[in-house]
Amino acid sequence: MADQLLPVLPVKYGSLRVGGMTFEQSPLAETVSLGAFSGDGRDALVNRIHEAFGVMLPEHPRAVHTMDGRCAFLWNGPSQWLAIAEDGAGLLSRLREVCEDVCALTSQSDSRAILKLSGPDSREAASRLVPIDLHPRAFGKDHVASTLAGHIPVIMWQTDDVPTYLFLVFRSLAASLFHDFSVVLNGFSSSEMDTCV
Amino acid sequence: MRLTCPFCGSRGLEEFTYRGDASVRRPAADASEQAWVDYVYLRDNPCGRHQELWYHGAGCRSWLVVTRDTRTHEIFDVRNARDVAVAERQTEAGKGENS
Ligand SMILES: [Zn+2]
Image (cartoon, rainbow over all chains, first blue to last red; front, side, top):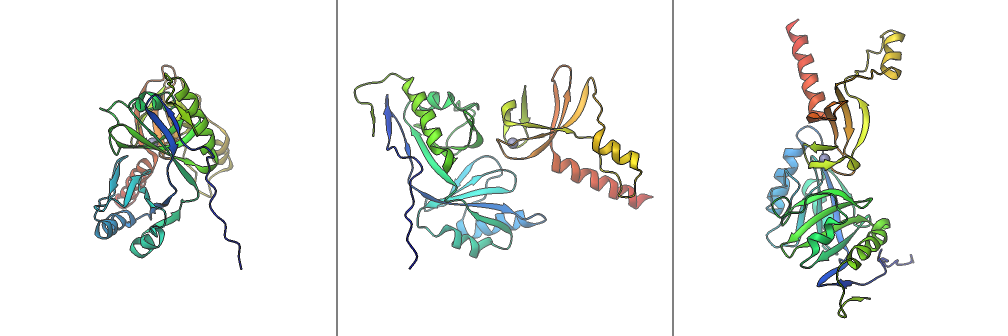
C-alpha cells in the first residue's frame, strides 16, 4: 500500500500578535487557476461559470463570491482567474465538469500558501512591504492585486474593512514572507499581550 | 519611473522588465540575409520617442507596448501588446483585400 503523505505546513510558526494585529497562516485551501482558451473561450467560460456558480468572473482586479460563500473567484491577469474554496471542497473536479473544454484548469492548491494579516494598523503595516496604494479610495474590500511584498511575488486580496489582507504566496517563499512581516510588525509598538507561538 | 499597466494600474518600475524595441517586425522567411541581420542584431538607439516592449512580470504577466521619451522618461502611451498585434494584423488583412 502506498504511504499516505500528510501535508506539511509551509510555515512552522503559529500566529504573531502585535499591537492588535494578527499575522498567521490561513488554513489550507483548494486553489485552481482558470485560463480561458483563445477565440471565444473567454465568453464561453464567463457564461459557464455564471450558470454553474451564479457569479460573473471579474473583468478587473477584484474577487467575487458565490452566494453560499464557499467559493471565490479572483481576477489573475487578462482572461485568467483563480478559484478558491476550502480544503476538501472538490473544486477541481467540479470545475472540470463545468468548463474543462473552454479553459485550462490547473490545480494550484500545493503551489501557494495563504498568509493573513488582520487588525486596525494592517494597512500601515502592509504598506511597509507592498508598493501599491492601499488607501481605501484606491484599494478596498475584494480588491485584488498581483504585486511584490518586498521581493516576494504575492497576490494580495483585501477581504474586509478591518482591514484584513490575504497574501497568496508560493509555498517555498511563505516562510520568508512570514519572516519579513514579523520584522515589519516588530516596528510597531509592542505590549505584554504580544505573542509569537 | 512608473508605468500605468492597462490591467493593474500605476505600478513602480521594479515590477516590470524591459524587453526591447517594439517596432521591429520579423521579416518574411525568404527575406534577404541583410534584413534578417537587421532584425536579429541591429537596433536603433533613438533620442526621444521610442516604442518599447515591457513585461509586467510581477503583476498580471502581460506584455505591453510603451511609448516613452528616452531623454525625459515621459510616458505617452501604454497598450496591451496583444491588442497592438491584433490591430496590426487586421490592418494588414484590410490592405490585402483592397489591393
Ligand atoms: Zn499588469
